[in-house]
Length: 155
Image 1 (cartoon, one colour):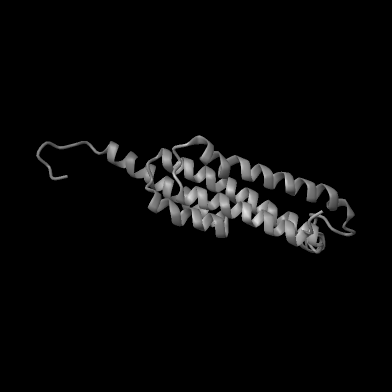
Image 2 (cartoon, helix red, strand yellow):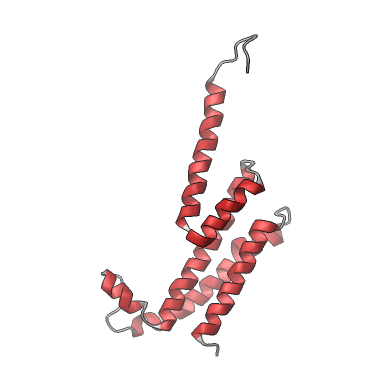
């Protein structure tokens, strides 16, 4: 049975593979896109479930009722690993969602890359950046559609 340190390495390598596929490889093939969007997050979710369900109730004084309880809960290597794998799974899943949504609205991959890197490194920062960019993108389209064209006026 692998140690928590070994599982940490395996999970990190799987997530990194997903991010490399998501950022650098083409998305025109569904199976290649499904690897970082679904397959790797699913595998990481199974690892998380196994760790969390087998160790959550064994941590005396740990829980989610206060910051101190969370600190106690994450004070064991297995639960700390579960928390880390949780981040890896959700950040990659959100990165996959961002990539697909960005492709749908025509955002260039060069623009997508830093947003995806921000999601990889800082999760919610990347998501917030994408959501703000997307809101501005649609707002610009709405404003240009609302402006009537005047014959002979410069564009």
